[in-house]
Length: 452
View: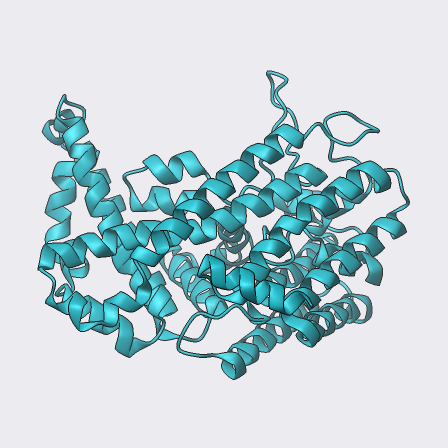
């Protein structure tokens, strides 16, 4: 009964059925959050764990059917590691190896030459959750003086119950597309502590609806703009026959629009977390309550920054923070930030999938960010360039910055979206590797003039 309706809806929207199922599942999080606020807020922890577990399992079954067994197996194995192996380095390493190998094997057996919505998509989110869980449990055995502020906030003083781990893993606000959050945050949610009015559900309807509105706007932009800038056009003879400037502009606009696909999902999912209370981030010195604990996007920064590094800082925030805390900072013993940075990006590339496009995308991120940092530092050291950057010409400079910024962003996203070597290399060849040449050879002089 449901399948024909979904097929008809997908056809009318011009979207694949799995994508429609995913969007509907993210939206269903709002009714779940309302049920929690209205009927379950004061219920015992066991009831809440059961509610979160079965609601998340329902969403997984709706999207992936019996393949939800993969997530259940990994959660169970993770719990057994914590319970049987204890708070040891062996537990952490075993968790990392098992969860990553399971994910990569899943990628290997389900991979196609296109990006598909299948069980490995939410499983990559779960993989980081479970690896982070083992690290937080390990940190719980350290002395406070041995931990930084982030570790103190996330450290687990005791092993969680199996039901608690299932509830944490299947929480409806983050089991499909994120965001990442710690078990300690989930425990505070279940205990009713993530609220601006103790003892009552949080006053989070307005901020939740604001993020929901942002997500819907981004979804509309992608839905309307996506069909005019499809990935498949890159591989056509028509694209190759276009003038060079047209190909560059197409890549620029395509790169901007394609990112709204991710922004929309993250913003809508964040709204669910805010509505439930998980997004509560305390109160500042002025008495203002903040709801950005689960923010995966800084939308204003994303739209206005002229820097590649600014876009990275505004995009997929929780995953980047997870990688910084659990990978980059763990490599401090190497004594070289560049090596730690490259290793972290390599981890993220492999975590995304086994296609060469992911590695190329993150490799280009490292090159572009490195050159950008060096160029901006150089501009600050040259008074005449700093004066030019702050002159009345800045609006013109800003426009050129944005053009270059989004051209390089789209250029870097081509491998990420086309995945296989033969496809993305063809597109890069069609624009004569312009972004790479610009950055690595002539780019430095451009940034000396344009970035301050």
